[in-house]
Image 1 (cartoon, rainbow, N blue to C red):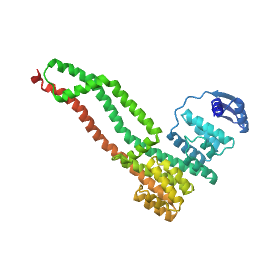
Image 2: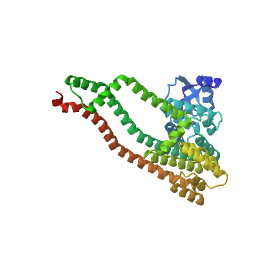
Image 3: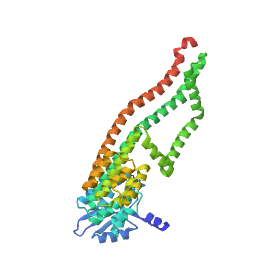
Length: 405
C-alpha cells in the first residue's frame, strides 16, 4: 500500500507540444512519472514532441456524484460521435474545471492505455464507480455496445441526481428559514431585550407575565449563549457524522424518513423511482435478474428497500416470479406490481419498469412543487407568531405605561 501511494505521488501532469505523422502541430496533456515516459508515450502515438513542460496540479475539490454524471454524459456523447476512447478521456479531462476529476480521468486513461479494460479500470475506484456502473460498462464492452450503455448510464445518473436534488431543495428550504429565524431570535434575545429591560427597570412597578418570560429567556441566552450555540452546532455535527457512518443510525433514520408526514410519501416515491429505474437499466443491458438485484437495493438509497430487495432476490433465485416476490414484501405500489406483471408476460420488463420510473419521478416533481408552495405560508405563520409574540411581549409594559408610572 505504501509503495502504491508513493508511486501515485510521483505522477505529474505534463503539457506538451509536437508534430504528428502528417507534420501537423498538436498539443495536449499527459500524466506520467517523468519527461522520458511522456516522450515514449508520444512516440507510440506517432507524435514527435517539441516541448514538454511539467504542470503543477492544483488542489481540487472533492468528486461528487454530479461530476460523475456529467463525465458519463460527456463520454457517452464522445463515443457516439466516434471519438476514440483514449482521446475522449483527454478531451473530457482537459475540459473539467475540477482538478480532482482531471486526475482521476488521467489515472483511468493510463490504465486503459496499458491494456486494462475500461470496466476493470473503473473497478479500481469503487468510491466513484459502484458495481452497477462497472457491471453495465463490462456488459457494454462484451456486447460491443459501450456507447449505448454509457448513454443509458448517463440517463440513469442524471435522473437519479435530479430526484436527489429536488428532495434536498424541498428539505433545505424550511431548514434554511428556521436557521435564519433562530439567528434573528438570538440577536433579539442577546442585544435587544436587555435594552428594554433597563428601560422597564427604571419605570418600576410589576411587569406583565409574557414580558417577564421573554426577559427570563433573554437572561438564559446571555448567560449560556456559548452552551446553546455549541450544543446545537456540536449536536448537529455529531448526529450527521453518526448518520453517515453508523449503520444502526442510518437504518433508524431511513425508516423514520418513510414515516414522516408529507415528506415520507415523497421519500417513498423517490425510492420506488430509483429502484425501478435501476432495475430497468440493468435489464436493458442484459444483466441477469438475480445479479441485477445485487445493485438495485443499494441504489434505492434506503435500508428498508435494500432489505426488501434481498428478500426479493432470495425468492427469485428459488424460482418465484419477480412480481410475486415484490408483492410478498408489501412495499411496492399496486401500479408498479401490475406493470411488472405485464412486463414479465410480454417480455419487456425493462420498458415497463422504465415507464413506472418515469411516472414516479413525475410524482416526486409534483410533490416537491406542492410542498414548497405549502411550506411558505406555514413558515410565515410560525415565524410571525414567534417574532410577533416577542415584540408584543416587550411592548405590553409600554401599552400600560400610565399604570406603571
